[in-house]
Length: 351
Image (tube, rainbow, N blue to C red; front, top):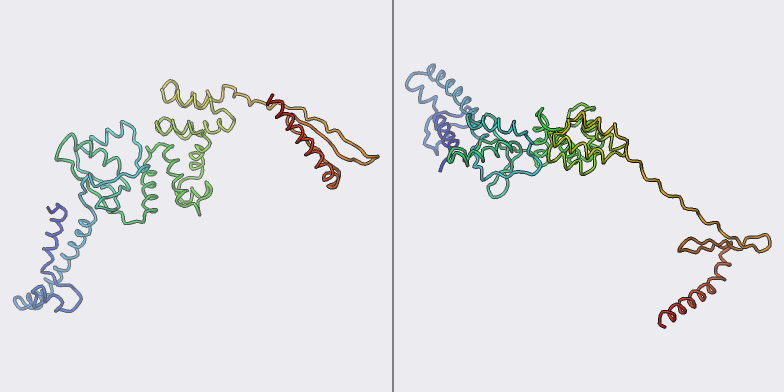
């Protein structure tokens, strides 16, 4: 069954059937039943001057139709079941923003088509517009027959470029949580590992202020538990609070940071109170390593020369000889002692 876009394309093509190309040989369209050019037909009826005027009008009409055809070919009505979501590309909206967008799409036609890339089996990978697709699926369930398809542009960029362009599309939204900007920056850095190695490189690549990039990338210093909290509630913290939490973690205040972040998510305190909390409470001091007394070696002399030094720790005996020859001479005797001791221990155990 022909889609609305295909029907429109056929109508537009029909309007151009009578228009002769402005270049090429006149007999190129003989197979289509054209024995004379449009200009020759008009000239035989109204004269040469009238023919030229009609030819100009035809060319102008053809230009307009070609422009409309280009648009028709670029936008498609894509069945929702043909769309594949890519993990990590969806922009997280607050509940209020999501519901507001849903009410808008329920009442009005989609103003901004989604972006897709063709993949195998006639499916399309979403590069931009995951929330719009999600809302259309909800509306399809609520209003059967009304939201079966969605308008989409074909994104012809390479896979890596499509991935990065999808990130940029999200970064342009002012309501994007700073934690998701952080994840976007991390992906851009990974996709351009050869050229993006520093915050300066990332700022140049994205066109975003260097200070803003560093502020957001300070999230690197948060522990994994804190990042898990942000993944679940990305709208709970802004870049200022996150930068303060990261600085506190660098000072060994991880436990205080996790506690404060949980309180913010539970709405027990606000972000400023969380900052005050992690810096007002003394951090847990690091446990000092107990110093152990190192045993003094016993030195054996031969006259005024050192023969060897002997030292024993809890489970280790070390003998350092002055020369390799002295070590070789005593090695057999040491092995014989160890052999006898091991045999004595076995006999004792067997009794």
